Image: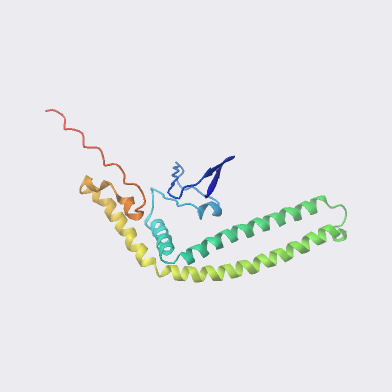
Length: 194
């Protein structure tokens, strides 16, 4: 069975479990490791933001291998940035703690040379990742017309409630049929007595 950690507790995970969190932040930012594991739904969504989300959904359904590769690239980029930060911190520590000439310190020379090797290796990885990401993005663009069409449909259905209140429910259900149906809207209040 799959398990997740919440704080100090390990809890068994059920594949039908859904966890929804809301925030009052207008534009929350999360680490790349978090962003690839969750679906963010901004209720103040713009047409461009919705197209990007729908493009991700369409590619994940049609070409899960591409979407998985894109997630790996994001995680690898975050790991590379973390490694570079560690190397920078180590160089600063060595420079701060060295006494006398830095050129005479064997520790400083070793740290700087290993940092250069790591930096070159990360640079090569990033170059490969950029080429791979360009190929993935080119393939993703083939699905863009579908995402654009569905985004406009989404906003048009959203405007139908101005014509008839019956259309207020079910807009998000069309994007993700796994969502539970929302409750029907309350009946309109009775007219005031004359």
